[in-house]
Amino acid sequence: MSQTVLVKSFQNGLQVFLDPEMPFEEVLQEVEKKFKESAKFFQDAKLALSLEGRILSSEEEHSVVNTIAMSSGINIVCLIDKEESKNQIYLNAIRNMELTRPNDSQGEFYHGCVKDGATIESDSSIVIFGDVYPDCTVISKKDIIVLGGLYGKAVAGEEQDEEHIVIALEMAPQKLKINGMKFRTDKPVKWPIKPKIVPKLARIQNDKIIMEVLTKEALAAVTRGSLC
Image 1 (spheres, rainbow, N blue to C red):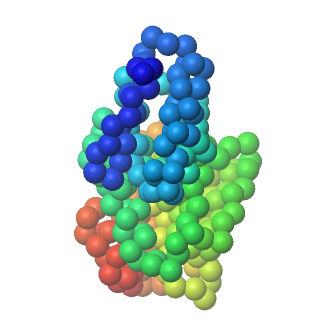
Image 2 (tube, rainbow, N blue to C red; image 1 turned 90 degrees about the vertical axis):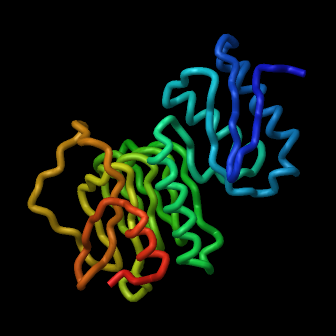
């Protein structure tokens, strides 16, 4: 059996060990083969993913994630790295989003950065695995979670709909709108100089959008639906 790619399971996720010496294209082919063989076993499972064994560039990381998703049908909800506490926050965020919106079973996942002025639109909640660059836009009729930096524009929820949320690893949007309300700040956004990473949640409170550090308490409030 080839040892180029090894897969081990853990609670709610998979560890994928990649050979550090083999050419990347050969490793990627082996990833595709291994996950195609296991596609029936996963059956659209929602799992966290940990890539180990070799150092990957952002492009290589995205290639592996996309190959696994396309070959197996797995919905990858989070890419685990060495910052365990940060990843746990995001896993909890996605789980709580699903609990809060039990009828929204068709959430969408976008793998890669949103750049070059692109606009991503969804009728359901959407999880972005990457950054949203300046002058790019993400529009969702429900919730938005950015597993990266939100430096462009985000529009979540409809004006007469239930209140929705926006979560980002780095929250520095050019424009932010939730349920028809606009977020206003007096502080200019600087990019690409990045501040210390602090995951944040944007929501409506007292008829205005507020931003707060993403904590267990904030997530609990969202889960309970106490957004006002």
